Structures are given as structure tokens and as C-alpha cells.
Length: 109
Image (tube, rainbow, N blue to C red; front, side, top):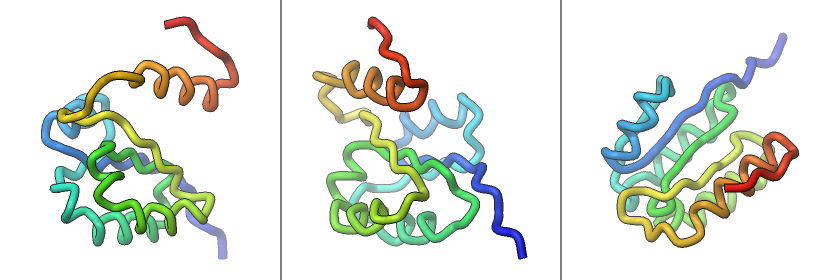
């Protein structure tokens, strides 16, 4: 039996952030209160087709214990992004680091 291809990108976040991901073409976008996202995180982390799970920093902070367990596995890759309530100090550095990790090149922003 062949294993499913991990080709889905999914996001969980506030309404504004979720709208941005919908407009970018991500088909599975969930708008969830950070404190209530735990069961959704568990469900999505068990989906064998999900490669990347994008969550806002607020969701990450409210679900640290769950995320620690999810991150023990290679998939899904968890990417934290600033949400609408985020302080944007250092956000540019995070984006730069993600690009460097994904592409292997450092860009000047």
C-alpha cells in the first residue's frame, strides 16, 4: 500500500490572517480562537496529506504543549506567522529565516 502524498497546506488563525491565506490560494483555512484550537491541531496533525500547518503566534502560544508533541514528528511542518494582534518587531527576521531555510539563500529585506 502506498503512503499518501503530503501536498496540503493548511492554516489556523484569526479572521484577517485567514482571509489573507484564502486569497493566496490555500484551500483549507480555519478561523479559530487560539484557546479552542487544540483539538483542531491534533486532528490536522494526524492527517497524512498535510505537509505544512501555518498557525498564528497567538494559536502557538495558547497550545504550546500540543505543538511540542506535534513537532516530534517530521510532518506536518509547523510555521508560525504573526497574527492581527502580533507585535511586528522581529517579524521581518522570522520571514527572512524561513526563506533562508526553505530556499537556502539569504535575502536582504
